[in-house]
Image (cartoon, rainbow, N blue to C red):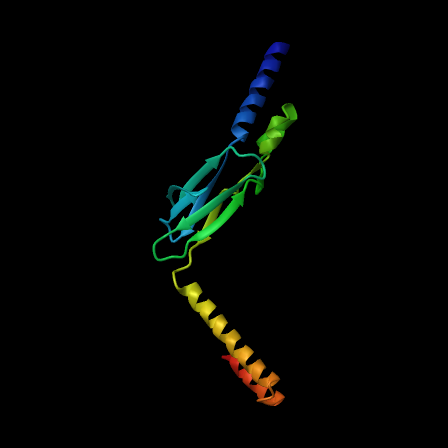
Length: 158
């Protein structure tokens, strides 16, 4: 009876150990159908199910591309959610403590259409240039402080 209980405990601990090593997440994009690159290699299209056996704190590089949209580059780490099975397994065998954290169940990324970011940057640059020009005119005493403040407000409100 004791040996059966011991064997059962070992089998359960081993099963917990091996099932707790893997973690998976669903990578989604809006719009769907974007190409997914994991660690720089093509992996598939969104929605994409990703699974690995990396240890706690490991980082995975991710790039998502779709025609007509800006490439989305990010990473996610295996430290987003506690894995109860690995923690319990770690009580019996210390090794599972390397896998006590998992990925979130899903990661969703919003892709930005091409050109929308460039317009904002251009607007920010022209606004900055106008403000610098006004400041220089004020510093060179070409306009009064009142004129500077008035023009500055006008630029900022547009």
